[in-house]
Length: 510
Ligand code: HEM
Image (cartoon, rainbow, N blue to C red):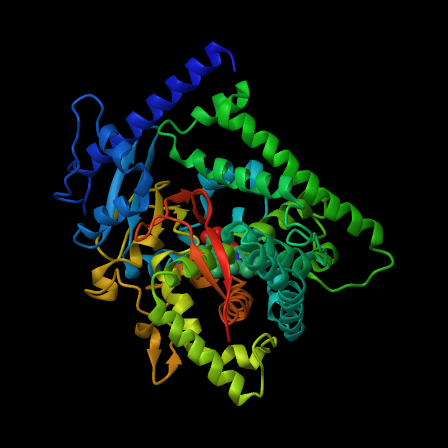
């Protein structure tokens, strides 16, 4: 990088960050803000705004936002940014219900969201509104509702467990090799979603566990760098960087190109095979149904959205779950007891694979995973745009074209929602008469809610419970991270652990 480029990048970065945080908090304390924090100890420097405070809190961005929202009377805050990017942040279930269901049509993804993610997600389901979204939702819903999918997911998960994950953990335990559990789970989920959605087995977890490394890294970079575009104070700064092919935009372009090559290969192969094969998977449904947009490019966008949905969510959820368990032997003990009872009842031995009905009996495990997602939701923030000015149920005014984000991470930590012990990891709060209860989706919008609710929820629970049960009954993890300290968040489109989740695997003596 030459010195001019470096200088330009540093300048852009400093201007963006300082303006963003100055304006964010200056306006959140102005009379335009309806439900603003009164006193949260933000120190506003006369020149640098909250920049020094931000730098101190950067590693805990979500916790910082949580403390702001917790201090607002209705857990909603209004703020403004230059470039007419004004918005609302909320952790209020009534507001969430209003935006995701009651007034759904007024809160689409909107042009800003779509534009910022266009290069990465194109017109895939995560990045569309209106007819294009409806068509993809309808086509994908058929696939996700079938009983055969359930069986296929079970088969695919079990294959990956038996032939890849368990042998890898056995070997790591024998050789005392350090494993990055987050990376391993991402590979598992990636193989799984490719097989379920496109009937392709990339074998990322196979062999020495390094195959597909280039794609995995590129996908991760594309997601992280795309979400970084939301952080610019001057909304179009990224366009200048993109035009000049500088810094993060240059890296984004390269990573997207690698991701596209991978997805294009899946499409090309499928198109060639199309005449011979009559497989009914997600991709073949789209190839059969999508008439107006049946271009290879549109199919590629569909592939990328599904990889994102399937790869980064369950792996994030399980990484935080295993991390939480590492300091809660009492919860681990209860899960092991539940598994033992199910094995006894069904004449099973440790290491036998659990079937669908047995997984359904695992109420405590379901509660322990749900409770972990309450505190560490895989999608920590979700954003929509306001089409026409509106007044939210808590009285907050929202203007036309403002954005509105519900912060799932903060909602899991609101005393107003979960009570005084909201920050405690307590699976028991989910159990009623021995059954894991369904929580109100607007209070617990981890899987979104309303017409755009996650299509893969059931599939995700099948996968997460299968992995957790099979791993926990045979292995324990010695976490190689500072004890008692929460891993730093890597803010991407999903909540990941910065630097991974290194462990040493110990096979249990039974
Ligand atoms: C723990 C696991 C998961 C969590 C927490 C989760 C969460 C979410 C959330 C928050 C959304 C809304 C995102 C948005 O506003 O665009 C969503 C949408 C979606 N999810 Fe999931 N998800 C999970 C697993 C999966 C899996 C395994 C699949 C399967 C491929 C999947 C498929 C989808 C699809 C297709 C949508 C788009 C729905 C639409 O826009 O109509 N999800 N999910």
